[in-house]
Image 1 (cartoon, rainbow, N blue to C red):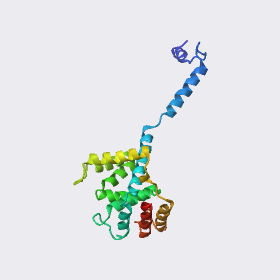
Image 2 (cartoon, one colour):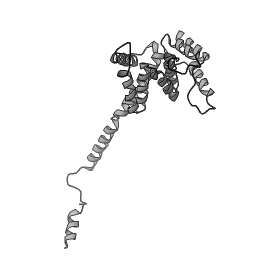
Image 3 (cartoon, helix red, strand yellow):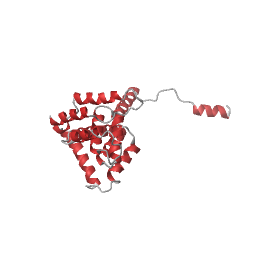
Length: 223
């Protein structure tokens, strides 16, 4: 026998079954391990789902605030306001939250960015959760930084502001609240109407609210 033959003989895989090896038990063990692995949720997916849930709660809370309709009313009456010092940033925040809750997510991001660019921390927090829900961690970190580290002249410590928002979202998600009613069908129809106005143009962003939408929001907050 040559040296090559000896190497091949040593490398040969035995075909006889090892004594005492239970094939059925091994297959059952593999099945259990596979099921256990499938049952463990992916941490990133869990984090994204939680962020989406928290954002929906925060948006409903903002939309249900007593002065929400007043701010959207002012936003509707300022069609030529294009700069941050002219824009009703609270109105932009409320409108963005309404857009998010009626599934116009890209438009919501645009209006949140307008408000956050003017220093509105709640809008920056919504953007943080929005990007986190999409799995966009770098963008989420950027907007969290805007909430906690990059606000000048804030009327409350940034950590306190963030803690309040987190606490409200957690409490409402666990216990429910009459102050977080989702948008009615009438409100959703008004938003869809505004979206349809831009359907024939290259712009996919829902235009600023008009008086008709503001009136509908007044009816919603008076219920």
